[in-house]
Image 1 (cartoon, rainbow, N blue to C red):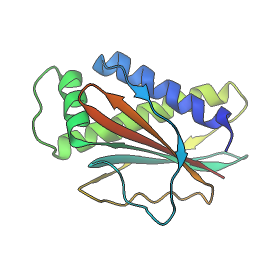
Image 2: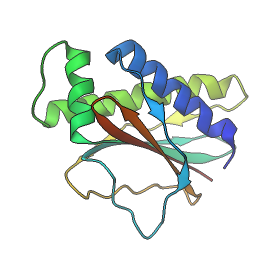
Image 3: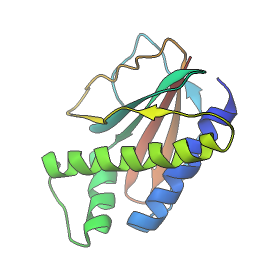
Image 4: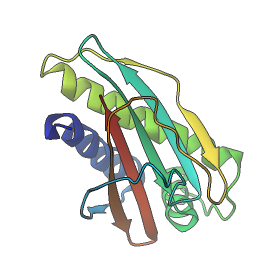
Length: 155
């Protein structure tokens, strides 16, 4: 998978977290996700598909409970203590904003993507299924409150 597809998502993610949640995230070392281990590493995920004439792919952002409760608290300017449907909706909105930012950046490189509607999944050991047949790159991130993971797959 080309870095030119991955970097726009990471740039958009850092921008969204910085502007919407006043949160700075630090990326860890990317790796390929083992296809035999589809379980998410977090507690709530937002997944969105993208398609263009050149390729198709998907993005998933998976947050640990501690990380998303901190981010949600900062975004809403009130203490959020429970992982519920409102927090899951916020994960979907974060995923949508990240994809929108990446779409804009990719369009500058000549790629015109259509975005699907984000899907949210919540619960321990939930499964993330990417629709593309390409490899899945997973990038861990750390914030002060915990971890989250970005998965990107393009054909």
